[in-house]
Length: 75
Image (cartoon, rainbow, N blue to C red; front, top):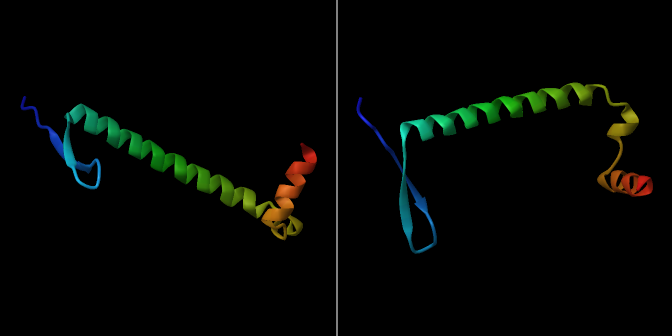
């Protein structure tokens, strides 16, 4: 079994760039996190697509200022 490391350059400041190494296990973990994040974002967007379709026309007419005012009234 060969150990293959992935090298990634990163800029730490304007004047110095550094490098760090990732093991295959670390890289797989990062890829799994990315895949999970992409799934969560897709689920989130699908949820809001359904909920937006259920909104009444009056809700679509609300401005940001109206929403802030309503929230402050409830507090």
